[in-house]
Length: 181
Image (tube, rainbow, N blue to C red; front, top):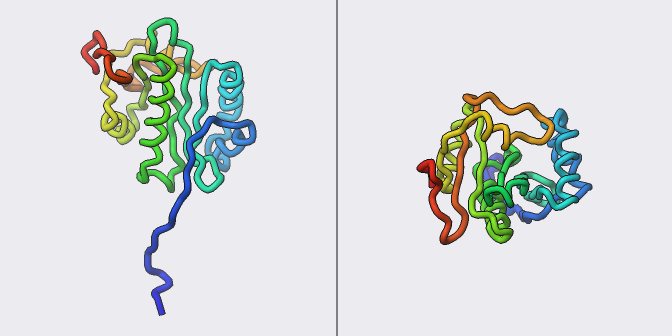
């Protein structure tokens, strides 16, 4: 007889795809992000108008990871903003976040963006290390640059509460003037 308490592995089928209306309640993750309900719906409306894209990592039929792309700076400086990158806690460390970021960057590159930008809370150094492993580097941030990355309808973060990270996309992309890559 096998030990009923012995660890075992499971196979998990995951697909990364655009968010659908029926995903919206699931993105609240059983109440964890319920206070963001209005914001989630607002970004979905922007997606429907072609101004944003909400990517979902669907694991066995459940939206278990997400990354949101904002296209508003396409014509200004060819920078795509990635935010709300998260993976359901029990699935972290399995490569889901990396796959979401790969998909987000590939989509931005295909749409003609030359760089991707995101912010990371200073209270979350693990997230900063994750993004640095993917090639993001800190760039100088002032209140104006952080305000540009704030979700629509929300107050801009305090200048010292977040790191601003940037990465060039695709071959031929040049390092940023501020010394980041």
